[in-house]
Length: 399
Image 1 (cartoon, one colour):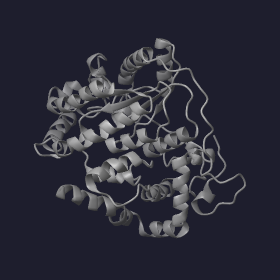
Image 2 (spheres, one colour):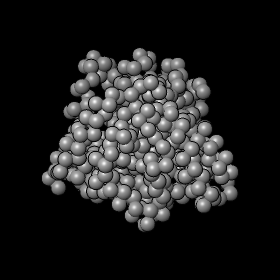
Image 3 (tube, rainbow, N blue to C red):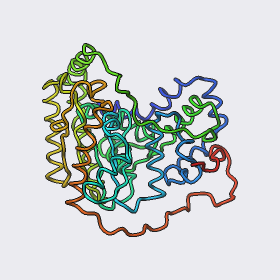
């Protein structure tokens, strides 16, 4: 518990004492002077309820073309306001999950072709997504209609501790609020703060202005690029081998982060699956791609440890597990590094993933679609109502 309290203390003060001083002082001062605290509260409310998507398109919400947290936060907010009436497939996990398929539309088409169920695939994976963020995203998804939540897994997400979960609680990693994450942390660490994401929103707005150089959400729309690597991009063989050993002697060492925080991350994953199942989703625990030519059996003992957790979730929660590495026929030229697929690898992986998802949807057919009740708009300002501060910067939606 002493170790846990140390991390709690760091988490409580992190955004005040560590994060903010790193920002350029003039920019920080200008941001805090121009944007009142109450406006951040209003922005938080608009994001939490999904109202922000009524006035701002995703292209104007993103900080950059590669803004994973902004993309995920916007998609979650949109789903709050516009829950799908057809089965949905949500892909969660880190950047290895983000890079393992060609496109959401082509994956949807592949599922439909195989089982006759028309789905809407949404990419909610993000770079270095921790299991705390995965739980927070699941906590915000609307009830399912026979859909599937895919959670990409490998050994590294089990290495992150209390500080990371507290950063997510405050919206510093993905700007979404999660009562379930707060309750889980509070059950272990006795928090005395609320699950406000205002600290994360302050950092996000500053990043937006730094990257785009315009008033918040009033710039031109930009496209989101889910893929980062072209076919001719690869780490050298020597560097790739060195990273395998680096992980073993760093995070994977005896008594290191993997062993220290494994149980905590297991609890995060278990809670995410529990909530997903309660919302009516099937859950697919998917092994992320792995460059076996370099990894070999070096990481087997870590994978065996979290695979035992997957086995329990399959038995106890009715989850599904798949390791596409065994059948995809991946080779060295399909990988950028140890885990991220290049276009040739995505071309091999996506059909296998579509097969698995089609099988789940075939075995667990969705119920007949029914209309959703009207979304609650009580938290949004009435048409024509004047707003001030940051919310006043939200321009008319431009799709």
